[in-house]
Length: 315
Ligand SMILES: *[C@@H]1O[C@H](CO)[C@@H](O)[C@H](O)[C@H]1NC(C)=O
Ligand SMILES: *[C@@H]1O[C@H](CO)[C@@H](O)[C@H](O)[C@H]1NC(C)=O
Ligand SMILES: *[C@@H]1O[C@H](CO)[C@@H](O)[C@H](O)[C@H]1NC(C)=O
Ligand SMILES: *[C@@H]1O[C@H](CO)[C@@H](O)[C@H](O)[C@H]1NC(C)=O
Ligand SMILES: *[C@@H]1O[C@H](CO)[C@@H](O)[C@H](O)[C@H]1NC(C)=O
Ligand SMILES: [Zn+2]
Image (tube, rainbow, N blue to C red):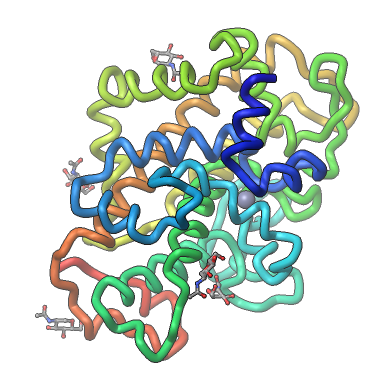
C-alpha cells in the first residue's frame, strides 16, 4: 500500500494504469526493473544525455517513464501495434520480413521495427541531422526504453492465433486470468510476495548481483551486436519466441491451473529476461550517445528501406 501511495505522488500516469488491465508488455514492475538496471550501466556521457532528454517529472530517473508508452497507448492508438510482433502459430521462429507488420499489413509496424525507428531518431538527433524531421527525442527515448523491454517478454513474440497468449484463459493459482498476463505481471508479482518481501528494489538488487556475478561473462555477450550495429532487436525476438514455445506455452493450454510447478520453473526465465533487457538497453543507449563518429552514408534513413537503412555501423 505504501508503495502505491508513493507512486501516486511521483507518477501522474498511474491512475490510468490502475484502471486498465495491463495486458500490454511487462507490467509496471517489469519495465521499472529493466530501466533501473539499464540506468546503472550507462556511461557518464550517456547518462548525461539521457537525463537531458527525460521530462522534468522523471527527476533524472529513466525508470520513472519506462511505462509511459503503455500509458499513451490509448490516445496514441497508432503506437499500439508497436509493442509486440506476432509469429505464425506453432512455428516457434521469427523473421523480420515475414512478421514485422501490423494487422492491416503495414510493414515495420511491430516492436522490432519500432526499436529500429526510435534508435535511428535518437542517432540522427545526436549527430544533429534531425533538423528537418523534427522528431521528439524525449518520446523516442521513452519508446525505445519501453520496447527493448517488451521484445524480451517471450509472449510479446508469441503466436498470431492466440494473440501472444491473450486468448488463452488460465488460472494463476485461484485467480482467473490469461497466459499473456501471467508473463507480463503475475510471475513477477508472485515472486515479489514470495521471495522479495514485496519490495521491487530487492528483486532489482538480486538481478544486479547476478549481472556482476554468475552472469558476468554472459552479460558481455548480451550487450554485443553483431557487425558493430548500434541496435539488434531481431535476435532478441528470436530468443523470445523460442522461450515462449519452450516455457510459456508449454503445459499452459486453455483452462489449465498454473501453480507452484509452473511458477518456480518459469521464474528464472523471467528474471534472466529482465536482466538481458536491462543490459541490452544500456548497451544500446551507450552506443547511441557515446560520441563515436558514425558512417553517415550508411545511415541511409530517407529511402524508407529499414533493413538496409538501419545497419548503422559505428566506425
Ligand atoms: C516511427 O516514429 C514516428 C514518431 O513517433 C511514428 O509516427 C511512426 O509511426 C514510427 N514508426 C515505427 C515503425 O515505429
Ligand atoms: C515531446 O514529447 C513530450 C512527451 O509526450 C511532450 O511533453 C513534449 O511537449 C514534446 N516536446 C515537443 C517539443 O513537442
Ligand atoms: C541468480 O543466479 C542464481 C544462480 O544461477 C539463481 O539461482 C537465482 O535465481 C538468480 N536470481 C535472480 C534474481 O536472477
Ligand atoms: C562480441 O561478439 C563477437 C562476435 O560474436 C565476439 O567475437 C566478441 O568476443 C564478443 N565480445 C564480447 C565482449 O563478448
Ligand atoms: C561508409 O559506408 C559506405 C557505404 O557502405 C562505404 O562505401 C564507405 O567506405 C564508408 N566510409 C568509411 C569512412 O568507412
Ligand atoms: Zn508495452
